Length: 235
Length: 125
Image 1: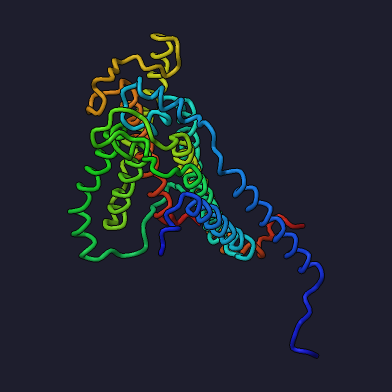
Image 2 (image 1 turned 135 degrees about the vertical axis):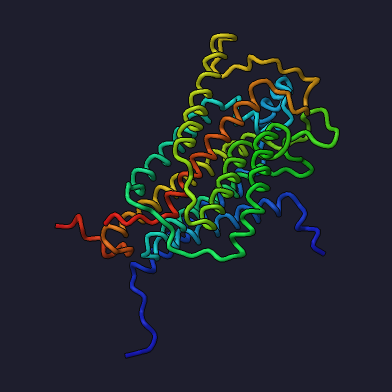
């Protein structure tokens, strides 16, 4: 028996087929991405100048695609609900690993700074890179630090429910008020003057909606983190 | 010597080939690994390659991020904000799907004590 094993024909043909596919996709991507004529983003950038918000990505996410962001938050809520149904139980849940002295001390020092940074990213989302999603995830990372440092810490469930309900209801309410005032769902009914561009209080409803998104994402992510990290003895 | 790396077309080729390589790394992991959590991580790697491709394809030379800073007053010479917003959506949805999948894997391990997909024979008659 020779040392060299013969490759079967099906393996060889599979390799050849995948090679041809890779070359085809690469060719399509390399050929068609060069000459980008006029972009849809140019029109949006022109429209964005009338809204008085310095960060164009925020305007696209919250205002031009505001209805999609509402659906995205619904998807995040459904994922959080599924994880809660799957992993939560009424018996005592706890983390098995022990935390040491350094982690306990450092978490007490770091937690306020992380919270402050998350709220800053959330509130300044219409002026600088950042926004509700990023700020919410930063706040959830602070909650994760508390969870791994203190075994007896639990995310207050009633507060999370209240925050989440408030955020979801007020998002829809702001959209409905816009529908009543200027005949457009999520219309910008608050004053948004272009001369105020770059200030903290500018852009009408856009920073308010992004703060609401941040509250909702932060509370949902905190619950997801707590459900994933705690082990329940229910079997 | 390395000035050719600064050309827009070179950067575009690097973005396309690199994100395709990352995509196939994820696909290889998806097809060869048997552990449930490793499979979900492979799917996350494939998603990341698509994010990089989307952001990289909208890159234009001498264009800046679509945010007014440093005394600018007009939205000119800026990159397209739409792919950034789309990828922001995609990252959040991908994170939610990954967390849900991992929680399914944890619950399956708690119920059966198995993580290998070859040993999943509960539904087989």
